[in-house]
Image (cartoon, rainbow, N blue to C red):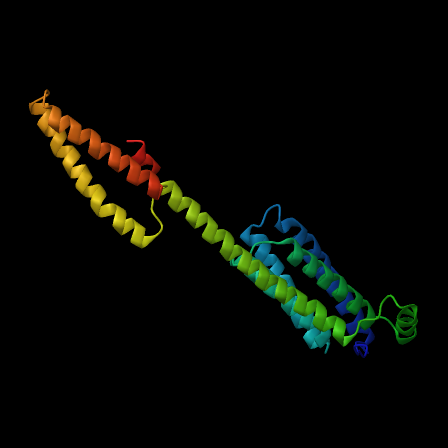
Length: 232
């Protein structure tokens, strides 16, 4: 549970890193807020680039703790850009917590020692290694969950589209085979009977056969859920 070592010694580098990082954090915060409203590729690419740059800047300063979270945030942006995931509430919350944690870490990395100690004593700014692992890991887990949800939704949409194309498709292969052969035979008998009636309209025997075959076809079709055939 030790606190993370995170202090940039050089005054100029400290000032430059803080201003640059604060700009990136703001851009990421605003960008992720807009994802749900307009997840366009250009905006998502901007998010990926900002997270990547934040990671690179932090590694250059030796701030691996910040880079660890930035890597997870970059993964979220990449997954959104590739349309591998949906933007879920848990992922939204994890990314928001990640950015808030990075913001605290940047302050600690760019605050003079006396002020940093005061902030730690106050209990509001302290960030531990466990915090880093929990926040970064939470984003990764939320990405995995969002990807699973995206797959489920895609499968559901595919099923809906298939139903729209062929709403009467019998899903069970064995049942489909059992139904198909007798149905084709009945249709053939019905077709031949209609031709016979066309030639001899008063043929009561053929008419009786037709009624029986149509009735049986309707009954079989209802049993297997072929509604359009049953409506015939």
